[in-house]
Structures are given as structure tokens and as C-alpha cells.
Length: 310
Image 1: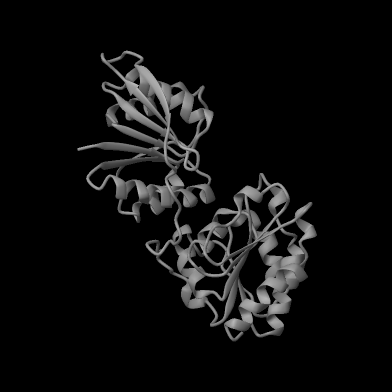
Image 2: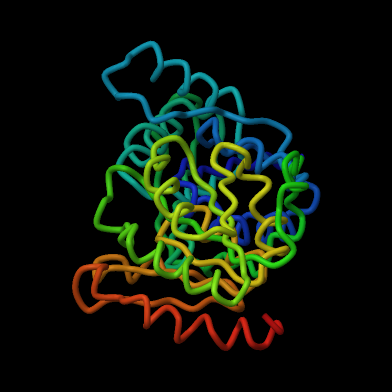
């Protein structure tokens, strides 16, 4: 049986965008045994794909952590892989895993790198523990995903959801404050929706607790779901919403790929992260993110509300 390793460590949005390529690889190798190398937070998503038999967890600790590095190298060698698809495409995967496999693999293998501009490296090993001859050739892209219909959560708190609502995703990585649309803008948008008798449902984590609380206070119809939803709940939550509005963050990508209208707001540095779902609207500022006004978002959201009879 052919053994294939797929490497995709994160972040969340990038991991979700790679799912389609993973599924295409599975279709191309229906009888293969698949292993996924990823971060621990993404295993719950991957398990619902019904694709992977094994997982190698890499939470991206320092290369100077020698026991950690040796443990990962040992797991990669033990996999005895015939092919590797590296979707992470960073120096970590190139220098830690690619060269480790060239040295430690007991047989010839193929290493694919990239999803759009894909390159194959054919490593021909005549003797175990030899470095192997490397031949580099271009290859075809792996493709995209259009929906997350397979993904479902426990939906424990969905009984608290209102009948008509817009999903707000006001957070993002604390390391990227330039990606956050101002809280005051989210608050004004929530107030406008309340005037049309439309609720807002706010999701996030403890890191954006204060922002979410401020937005919730702007609408008497707001429902604060902070820490009440998991990553696996988001597709079902998005499908129940009239639309979603959010920053450039993983949950926005999940909502987008769930097939429902999703508006994402970007500053001028994040054009490459645009949502790819079939009903997505990407608003990209020519400057800082606050240059996207509430009126800009309302102009895109209003036709969606009217079409939904809201």
C-alpha cells in the first residue's frame, strides 16, 4: 500500500484553504494510507475528513529543542513514506523534514511542495542512509475546496440562537492588530441591524472578550456566544445565519467555505488572504482597515438582507 504524508501546520485559515487540495490528493490515490502532520488544534477538523489513518503533531517548537526535533524526525522516518505533499512551504519543513527524509528514508520517495505552483522532487536512493539523488520537475496544482459540508460540531448552545441573525467575527490573531476592523464600526453595524429587527451573533475567544462585550452592548438583540462555539460549530452556525461579517481570520474562511454570504474586511496588506467561498465578498482597503466604513459594508450587506426578506 502506498504511504503518503501531507504537511499542513497552520494557521487556521490556511489549513482550511488546503482541505480541497487534500481531498483531491485522496481522490488521486484512493488506495493509499494517509498521515497528516499538523498542529494539535487542527486534528479535530482533519478527523472529520475520514482521510487520515495517522497524525504527527508539530506545534512548531524551536529547532533548538533537540529532543522535540529528534522525536519528529523519528516519526517521519518510521512512516516509510512513498510521497510527501508539503503545503506549509516554509524553511521549517524544507530544512527539518525534507533533508531529514533524504538522509533517513530507507527508500526512494517523491516530495511535492506547494499548492499553486507545485514542484516535485524525486529522491532516488540506491542505499539506505544515503543522501539520494534529487531531480526537480514542475507539477500540476492540487486544486481548491468549495464547501465544508462534511464538517459538523456538537452545537451545544445553538438553542440560544435567534431566528434571524447576522454572524459577527470581530477577532483575529492578537499578533495582527492591523487586521481588526474597529469595534466602533462593528457596534454601529449591529445597531443598524437592530433597527431592522435583526440580531447579531458574536463569536470569539477570551482574547477579544472586551471587544465582543462592547459590540453586544450596541444592540438589544445581540447574542454573545464567546467561548460557546468550537471550530467545528462554525460551518453549521454560518449556514443558519443570513450572512457573516468578519475580519481576515480562520473562522471567516470557514464561514465563507460553508457556502453562505460572507463579507470579509481587509487592510491593504492582506489581499492574498481573500475569502474563496462561492458567495464571498472581499472588501479591501486602499490603506488602513478603518478606511472601510460602515456604509461600505452596509452597501454590500443590505441586498443580502433584502433577498432573505429581512
